[in-house]
Amino acid sequence: MILGYRRIVTHPGILGRPPSAVEADANIRALLEPPHIRTPSEGDGFWAIFEQTAAAPGTVGNHVPDAHLVALMRQHGVRVIHTRDRDFRRYDGIESRDPFAA
Image (tube, rainbow, N blue to C red; front, side, top):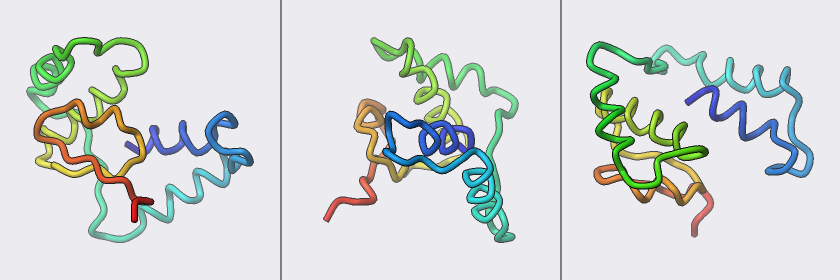
């Protein structure tokens, strides 16, 4: 998830004036600072969850990182993602919320 944030916010095609990698990393450190925040990683059984998630038709190319994130979410019991990326709507059991929607 953290790497996805860094990838998106530093991409000049997504943001007109993206922050530098140093600025993005400072944002990440600030996000990770509170003691109740943790970063999920692949645990035992992850590959089976990923394979099931990635079995959806069209899970190739740019959809692979999305499937990876959804598999992590499933493994750690996370059901909601706040994103503007509509591609997450394709995954059953995952609620995609646009943080900028009225």
